[in-house]
Structures are given as structure tokens and as C-alpha cells.
Image (tube, rainbow, N blue to C red; front, side, top):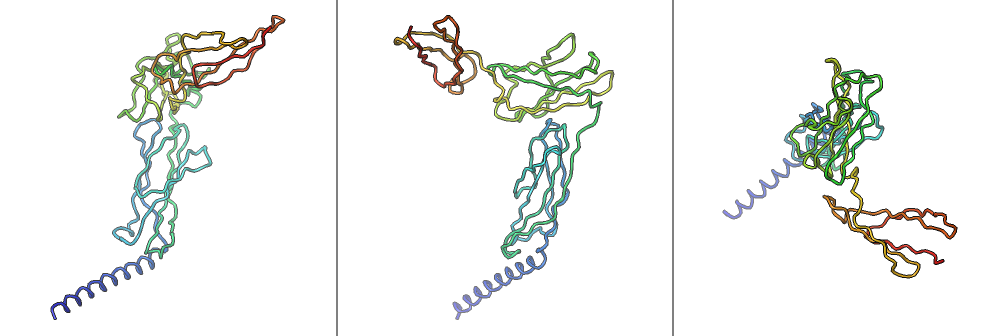
Length: 308
């Protein structure tokens, strides 16, 4: 009899929990075939010269309903770009890099799927916000044509051009940031022309490869602000290696010359390098015939020529 009662209680608990699940599923399906969007979408600029954070809060009506699988569809772009980037996430925040010379559009919607929607996908309306660039300073005061080169991973030089209508006594400053820094840093070694900052030199300890390296050039003129200009580089794409060392040429066979060399010394690993080989052939008439360059990965190149 005791065993019978125990089995009966287990069955009652099972049926009750199943009934609860059914009721919860029915209520979800009844009320959430139309789902609310997230709330409080904000764009946070922490001062990283291009990296922004987005954050939002979940719809209040969905809180504490275990039968619902809640996702968020996030889309964002710079306002001068037509194509949106799309991220599907369960998180309530996201970050990415942007060109702060342009506005930033961000929008997010709730995506609901599970027992509460009878396994179908339900999407909410979008909520959207925009971050517009700062308009401090005349637009003509912004520098242009910033060019940066990393020399053999030993140092980097960045040079810029200022607008010809800006007086030469304009005071420009360069700030930079990468993910290993807690905040943006100012250049400590400016390159100058006639006493005016026109560039910055970075030591190897200040560089960070294989990630975004954000730069802002701003400044002032007679206590008035100049328009800021923002740039993002991936430093490993702008490295200029030093030339090879100890190039030698040997006649290894009649009509064949072998050229060998050693990699340049420095911080660049030899397996990261390719080599371009160019040669000029002296023809019988004494004229030079320029050969097209060839790209090789090893440290040897053979030249075949016609014997006289």
C-alpha cells in the first residue's frame, strides 16, 4: 500500500509539472506571437578613437520565462556605407571599430524561438539609434593624407598634410590607441617642419600588430579647435622590411647564374618574407634588356641566359 501511494504521488507530481509546462507554453504562444523589442539601446564611446560599445536591455515581458529562447539580432554600419554588419547574439552588449569621421547607425531586435512560439521564429520591431561625429572646428581644418609606414618592425613613422588654407602655426597633436592600452596615448616624439608638428615617430615598444591601431589627429589654432581626423591601421599590412644582405652571384653552369642572399636582420621572421628579383640582361648589341620582376619565397634565384 505504501509503495502504491508513493507511485501515485510521483505520477501526480509528473502530471502536475507537465501541466505547468503545457500552461506556460500555451501562455507564451498566446502572448508572444508578437514580441517586444529590446529597450534602452545606447552607444558608448570610451575614448578609444574608433572602438564603440553598444548595450541594451531585454524586453520586460520576457523576463523569467524558461520556455523562451531569446536572441538579439544586431545590425550596425557607418552612415556612409550602405551594407550593414549583422551579429546574432544572446548577449546584451557588443563592440566593434568605426570611422568616427562619419556617423554610426545601430539597430537591434528581439528574436524569439522555442516552445513558446511553437518552434517558429518571431521577430520584434527594430529599435535604432545614431551617433553623429563631432563638428568642433572648421571642416577645412582637418588634416588629410595620413601615411604610416612600419620600418622592419623596429619603428613607425606617420606623416600628414594640413590644408593649405590653415596658417602654418596650427598646433596639431596625434593620439593613438590599441587593445593593450587602458586609454588613448599622445605621441611622445613629433616630427616637425619649420617648428610645426607634421608627423609622429613610434618606437617598437609602442606598436601592436595584428589588431586595430587607431589614430586621431586633432589640434588648435589661436585657442580655437581644429576638426579631428580619425584613422585605423592594421600595422602588419604596412610593414616595409629592410633589404636582404650579402647578395652573391655565381656561375653554376654555362648559361646559368645563381643568385643567393640572406634575410635582413631585425624583428621580422624570415618565413614571413617574400623577395622580388629583377635583373637586366646585356644583349649582343650592347643594349640592356630589362627583365620583369619575379616573386620568390626562398633565398635563391637562377638566371638562364644565352651564350654568345
